[in-house]
Amino acid sequence: MVKFPRNFLWGAATSAYQVEGNNVNSDWWQWENKTGKVKSGPACRHYEFYERDFDLAKSLHHNAHRFSIEWSRIEPKEGKFSKEALRHYIDVILALRRRNIEPIVTLHHFTNPVWFSKSGGWVKRRSVVRFLRYCDFLTRSLAKYVHYWITINEPTIYISHAYIFGIWPPQAKSYLKATQVEENLVSAHIKAYRLMHKIYKELNLCEPSISIAQNVMAFVPSNRDLKNRFTAYLRDRLYNLGFLERIMRHNIMRHKILDFIGVNYYTRQLVELRKFRIGNLAMDVCNDKRHHCEKNSLGWDIYPEGLYEVLLELKIYDLPIMITENGICTSDDNLRWKYIYSHLKNIHRAMRKGVHVTGYLYWSLMDNFEWDKGFTPRFGLIDINYSTYKRTVRKSARQFSQVCKTGVLE
Ligand code: FCB
Image (tube, rainbow, N blue to C red; front, top):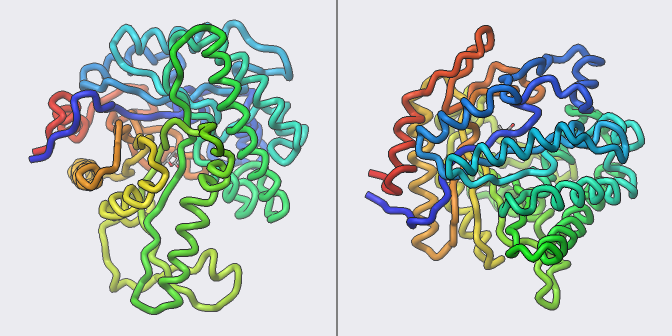
């Protein structure tokens, strides 16, 4: 039996585009319609049904909930902020507060307003000023209701999928653009962090807690070969720590730049280098079936001990850590509980080694629109019937709710 601290945050995460539905002013919406990809359409209709969804979260003893604000709703035209959309998100936050659920608000979760993308998106230097204007507006409007913020979700995934692999909009395949986007996202976070802290001070509110959500993976060499161990080490530095390191460089003279570290962890990568070339160093994986391990329905390896390893590594930054995403898509709900259970065990193991973990947010509260993969992957604690929009709480959600309620994992 293991016991988590009393003030631990327990809950689940979602993102606006994946659950709300009809985000017609977003660049993803435009892209889906242009490319004929799976359409997000009404998604889970969470924009209408959020109260009911939060009732379910409450019944599952969640005391925290991470969600994102859709920039394209708040600022559908450049510089023109929608009062109606703002009112909606205030209502969302108040709905959480009424249920004693702590809101954790993400400002950017992969999607952008159409006008922003049309004029060059994150490649352009002025993207930073634009993002700051949006942050300024939201922080002034929401500061009195919100303590925890995530500025940018998974910058490394966003950069690689949208600007290197060309899978997500704007489907670029350019290292040059990827570098510019990285530069701008680093700067966007740093400036937003400072601006938001300044606004809280001006408003005489106690300091907020602000971070990014950094995706991390366990990079595991497929055997003891030096070349594989070296490549795994390199990828860990690059993909897990690269963006954080860039931000931390600004953490000088005690000017903090992160109040905690948001960690999204799902899987491992088995590293096996075939050739000493840049592309291979960055991408080669081992496909040998002998390294069998259980997988989610997208074929990602289930590797809970990797979370322990990564958490220990992050200890060097000496900051609290919040697990802002961890979850599994599967049609086997017993496997979902096993996944949650084994990851929580490893989090606790890391805590016993001195890692300060403050919360765990399962991805996701409900099944939702999984980007280019559509609606097939089922990550939810709650099942969604996409014909009737009926919500059904899964058994794994109830098992997890016992941990949320008691803080004890048997
Ligand atoms: C993460 C994303 C989230 C969701 C999960 C499965 O990379 O942040 O939106 O798609 O993966």
